[in-house]
Length: 293
Length: 303
Image 1 (tube, rainbow over the protein chains, first blue to last red):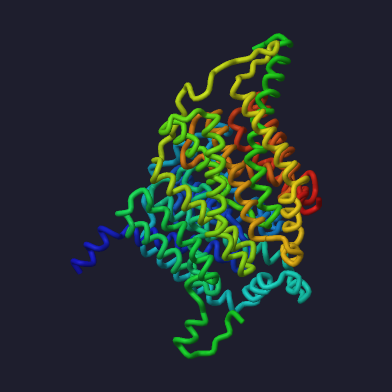
Image 2 (cartoon, rainbow over the protein chains, first blue to last red):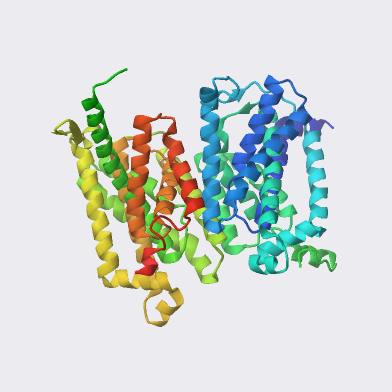
């Protein structure tokens, strides 16, 4: 018991960050699973964080409701953004979504100035958010999402998204409404990212416009690249490794970040499917599963 | 505040001058970006990191080795060109051999840029570094009511010279022909006896050198060099090459000037808060209306 409390005092926040990053990993998993490279998730996270923080700080709403409203706003913006942007293909989609994150930052910095309100604190950010995120609430959300994901893969929607990733034209020939299903994956990802943003704002007690820039978007992407998109647990494992690793590498000082980059390159070069490959499960459990046929 | 009409005219021409030299550097930066895309179909997100390294190499040459700036520039270009080759060998070549999808090369270039930025942070520290004030003679020319510094004129001159040289290289030399062939179809080019691997190496060298030149010149102009200077430039560069059409050499030049004009004019006449927003608004509009850019298809391929 004593060892456990000691562990929690030292590493409790790391564990909670791992859980939040797992949520972010899942958020980008939805789009990658559909074969879309979107770098907008940091922007969606920012929307969720700002909206939920403003609701608890200025409107005194209860945490679960502000979380949900924050995530829904992110999903709504995701829908608005996705309508035009999802017509673009790989490189172009990446560029457009990369620009979106920057637009969110600019709006956050200038919002108070243009509206004349003092809601989100401009470039200084919004501080003094009550600490309402608990490990239990995070874990509960994650378990719920995992359950959803397992069902999702077996569902009509999940199979449609996988088909789109495999070959868009074949999928559309088979009667799959490609545009709408892509939009659905995009919006689902935005919702989960917004949720993660809300949790993170109420954990660090601060939201600032510079927390959600390009490098944040890249970090989220790295979770899933490392874990792999062949199985949803890849996003979770990738997020866990890349959150714990910097803590373990503190002795490297300034050069700590280099490791993240090297991992990203090495994984893409030598493990193109990521760490988690369902084939290995099958080998271990000797079970014939065809979830990802 | 009411100002006489003539003052507005002067201010306008001053803004035009500012936009022209800024546009020339944007173009210089974007040329390497678009060249790699045109020849290889790779969006090299590590290009801005080469730009940042170019600026730092120039800085080290001037500060540590007391070189004059006209010697530091070619050295920085050469070394960032070599860095470009190294980048290709380590991050792109293995993927090319495997015929990996776009997504993989994009992610690999992101990883490479993380490595480059963090290494720079370790080597040069995260603080903003500057060239010494006497690195370049301070001289102001007045053309009627409009004033231009010698530095701005030099930057404009060097940028235009490099652009003309690049145009000649691609259109009239053996290497340029080989590059265009590789861009058109890598497999066929190899069948016809073009040393594809060597051509790709040379392409990356040129792209890196262009990035390095832009780094030194913009580092001189704004006199603030940091490991993170590539970030804002990246988004500007993307806007420029999308404006001109990915892979389009002339397009990158045109796009650079369009972006510089819209930025300078919106700061001068609307609001300085809009400066960063301008490039993204442009980027979005172009992506949605004409994703192939204003000038249409890739000119490396078409020519």
